[in-house]
Image (cartoon, rainbow, N blue to C red; front, side, top):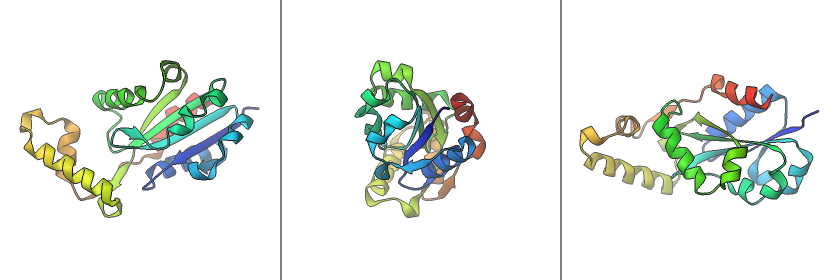
Length: 179
């Protein structure tokens, strides 16, 4: 029987919510990254890792990169969670470019990649993330309107608001991939 585990790192709760939904759908355990010992990876056949996207990087991705020798013969699935709409090919291209900077070509070929849309609650952002979003907003306001991408316009329109795009149905392709 295939033993599956879900491990995640979540700063604001969206990735955690997805991890719990996936665990429920697959009837498997779920662990927060800091509570999971990498040596325990050996006891699983399928490892699903979820991390939020912050400044183009995936939170906790080192679990995969630093333990690839334990993972390379297993089914590995990575889901990212961020504000960007995963239905937009431009966003997916940017996420995958960022991943290719930290994952080897072999890892990129072997890992099942899924991108899920989370949200943002400005009132809960850390000081650093608030500052980053403020700087991003200022940069976007300086751009010509015609040069703005769809996501840029969304950031400007909703700046400071609480947005939640998490959708339980969006885990279906990942769950079907694992099954």
